[in-house]
Length: 65
Image (tube, rainbow, N blue to C red; front, side, top):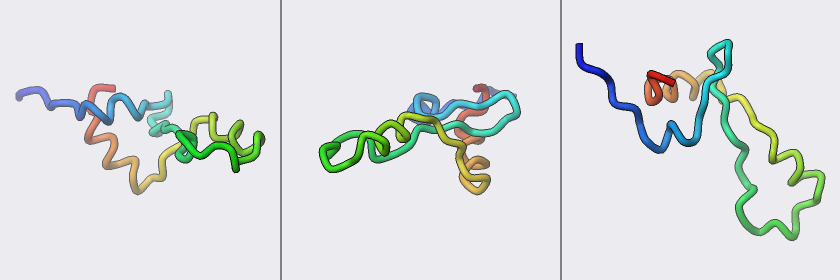
């Protein structure tokens, strides 16, 4: 069987935890940061877990990660 190609942008955006969950970064931290509170911006730094509905799709895109 040939190897499956890894989706290049997905391998940069997602990683797997030890239990196999998909870890992702939070959105809304790129620009227009003046109106967002310091607390809100601080919480956006933390990582998040992808929903189970999206996790199945992401796992197909990053088969060897």
